[in-house]
Image (cartoon, rainbow over all chains, first blue to last red):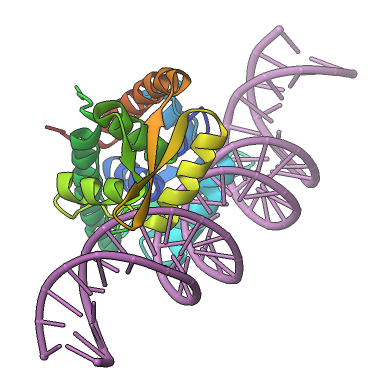
Length: 111
Length: 111
DNA sequence: TATGTATGCATAAGAAACTTATGTATATTT
DNA sequence: AAATATACATAAGTTTCTTATGCATACATA
C-alpha cells in the first residue's frame, strides 16, 4: 500500500480475506483495481505488496489459487478457504478493537 | 507497540503528539503507562519502540526535551513544538481518512 | 538482607511489511 | 507505431516494529 499511508500491519491480509469472502474468486490485479475503486484512489494497493502477501497466505493454507486461461492470457484466481474464513473473523475483531483503541487515544471521530 | 497489534505506520508519532498536546509535558515512561491505562492494557507501547521515536521527533524539531531531577532520578520531559502541532493536525487528518477507507473496505463499525 | 519488581533512560540485533524498481508478456487504445 | 492497460512476479532497500539487553535508582517483600 502506498499513497501517504502504509497499512496497519496485518490489515493487507484482512482486506484480501474480505475481498475473497465477498467475491468468491478474484485475481490479484483485480484486487488492486477494486481497492482503488472503493477508496476512490486514496489507497493504492501496490502489486509489490500484494503478490508476496497472496503467496504467503496460500502457503499458509488460508487461500487457494486456480489458473484460468482468458483469451491468450493467464489469470490466477484466488479463493478463501475454511481456515481462511476463520482467520478473517479473528483479524476483523483485532482490527476493530485496534481502531477502537486508537479512537480512545486520539479522540478521532469515525463515520 | 506489541500486544497482537503493531501500529499503523506513523500512528506512534501521532499518539506522541496527541499526548504531549493534551498534557503539556510528559516523559517517556509516563507515556507507556498512560497508553496502558487508556487502552486498559490492550495496547503495549514498548520502550524499544518509543525512545527511538522520541529521538527522531526531537531531531526533526517536532518535540523538544528538558531534563528534570526528581529526587535522585533523572527524567527527560518532552514538549510539543509549534511545528509539531501543525504536523499533528496533518497526521490526525491522514489517520482519520485512512480509518474511514478501512471501514469502507472492511465494513467495520466503529463506536 | 537479598531478591524481585517498578521506575527511567537507552541501544542494538533481528524480523516483518512495505515501497520502489524492474522484468516479462499480451491486449488495447491512440 | 507507440503508449497504456492488463497480468503475473521478484528483488533491493527502507522503515518500523519486537525482543533482548544494559545501566541505575527506588521500593517492597520474603
